[in-house]
Length: 448
Image (cartoon, rainbow, N blue to C red; front, top):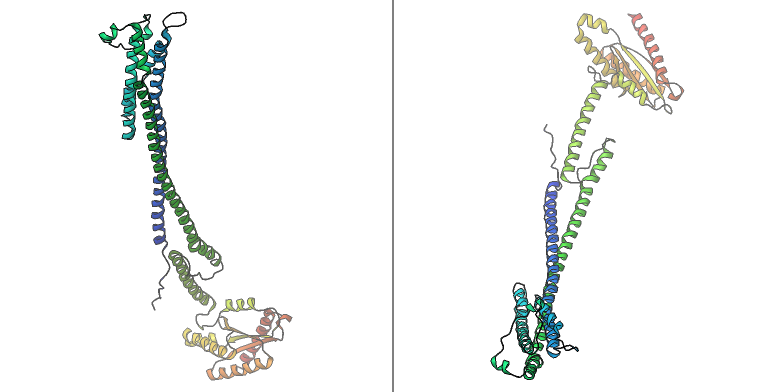
C-alpha cells in the first residue's frame, strides 16, 4: 500500500525574504545617495554664501577705493600747503599708496568677469568702474595742475602717481587760474555725478548679488528639504520593513519552533498548518517520522511481548501487566496451566505435532478466560481475571474443561483467588496457583 503524501501549504520563506532583501538593499542605497546629495547640496549652499560675501566685498571695494582716492586727492588740491608754508605731501603720499591697491575699476571688473554672477550685476559694476575711472582721470588732472604751482619734493612714495599731460593753454594760465581749474575738476558737477554714479551702481550691484545669492540659497534649501523628506521616507520604510520582517520571522518561524521544542520532548504531533512553508515541512517530516517510529515501536513491542507460536502475550507481557496493575481495590484470580504429554507428542509424532498441541491449548485457554492470557514458555500458560468472583472462575473452568474434551487434549491447571488484591500480591497468587496446578498434574498422571 502506497503511503499518502500530504502537500505542504504556506508561503515559502524564500519568496518573502528575497523581495525584502532586494527592497531593503535598494532603500539603503537610496539613503546613501540622499545623504551624499544632501552633503553635496549643503556644500554648494555654503559655497554660495561664501561667494556672496566675497562678491559683495569685491564690489564694495570699488566704492571704498574710489571714495578714498577722492578724499585724499581733495585734501591735497584744497590744502596744497601746510600752516608752515610747506607743500602738504601727506595726502599725496596716501593717494599714491591707495593707487597701489587692487581695487580700482578695471581690476575689480576683471575679477568679476571670472565670477558666476548675473549679467546685470556685471553691467552695473562696469558702469560704476567707468565712473570711478572718470573720477580718477579728474583727480590726476587736478593734481597735475597743482603740482605746476607748488614744487613737490621728489620722494619714492609718489612714483605710483602716473603723470598727466597738460595742454599748452593750461600751462599758460596764471597760477590762480590753474588752482581754480583744479578745484573745479574735483568740486564740479561732473565729478559729483560720477561720484554719485559709483555709489549708486555699486549699491545696485551689491543688491543684485544679494538677490541672486538669496535666490540660489532658497533654491538649494528647497532641494535640501526635498532630499530630507525622501531620506526620512526611505529611513521610515526601512524601519517598517525591518519591523515587519521581525514580526514575520517571529510569528512564522521563531514562535512555531518554540512550540515544536516543547511538543517534541512530550512526544506530541507538530502543527502542520501554521508558520512558513519550511516550518510546516519540518513539522510534516517530523510527524511522518514519528508515525513510522510509532508503527515500528508497535511492531517491535508486539514482537517482544507476543509469543510467536501461539500469538498470546508472553511472560514479559505478564510481568508488565502485573507491574502496571493497581495495588488494591479490586478482586483478582491467577490461573496457571501446563499442557500434558507434550514431550510424548514431540517424541512420537514430531515437533510440528507438538507445536500444534500448544496452539490448540492456547485456543482453549484464550477462548475460556479472555484477553489476559499468557504463554510463559514451553508448555506453561497463565491467565489473570480482574473484578471476578469464585462463581465466575468456576464457570470459566467448566467452559475450559469442555473445550479440552472437544479438542481431545489434556491440560493441568490451578488457580488462586482474592477478593482484594491489596490483601496479598500477584506473586503470592501465582505461587498458590502454581502449587495447585502441580497437584492437579500429579492427579492426572496418577490415573494414567
